Amino acid sequence: MSTPSDIKSVNLTTLNKFKENSEKFTCLTAYESTMASVISDCGVDVILVGDSLGMVIQGHDSTLPVTMDQLIYHLECVVKGNQRSHIMADMPFMSYSTDDLGLENAKRLMQAGANSVKVEGGEWISTMAKVLSDRGIPVCAHMGLTPQTINRIGGHNVQGRDPSQKEKIINEAKTLEKAGAAMLLLECVPGDLAKIITDELKIPVIGIGAGVHTDGQIMVVHDLLGISCLEKPPKFVKNFMENSASIQDAIKNYVKDVKDLKFPSSNHTFK
Ligand code: KIV
Image (cartoon, rainbow, N blue to C red):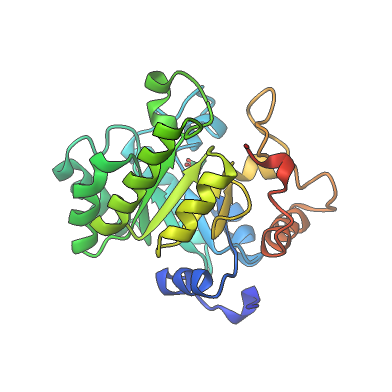
């Protein structure tokens, strides 16, 4: 198993190799330079500048108010602190409502230092995934619970529990892979569904609330540090500060537990 010091700089090839070698990789959100530096130094492979910043930094009750300019401001801070991690940047709500707008905004994120962009959606983003990918922009498609559609789906509910929804998610994930998506992120889906998708796709699959079988895991850094903005943290969240002496220890324990398949446990997984 590779150690963080073996890897100078994490890129898509590194993440694909992790999948090929059945070695788990780790991702965490960051929104500013010092935390990005600590996270990267602790061996986290991917830093996501997530639109969760709307909740944990700005104090909104959803990710919808986050703008492109705000995302770019936080991305530039993270880029300055990062040493070796792959930086993924979120495309905010409505920043890709047409394919042309998506291309223009993805270009801005890449020019601000992102290594890939994350876009919420299923089949409907497949043309855009191809357009971006053909132009050299790696796309991570975010499926399952997609927080930007919270008003339509009616809450932070587990997705893909009934058979028709499950089949739809599997088919759309395959369509996105064919279209050129470089990665897939599954949020809040049953562990068995995440396993099927991870096994069937060649691209790396990252999970949050999706069980232990995805190729990589991601957490919002505030959740890992036990300072979740929600009154009751979701089932899939683990407070790594509880058994750690410092923030650095908590992040290193997260990396170790993911690599050793100890996190997420069955208690953190939807059936
Ligand atoms: O914005 C974010 O932090 C995310 C994670 C929850 C995956 O999309």
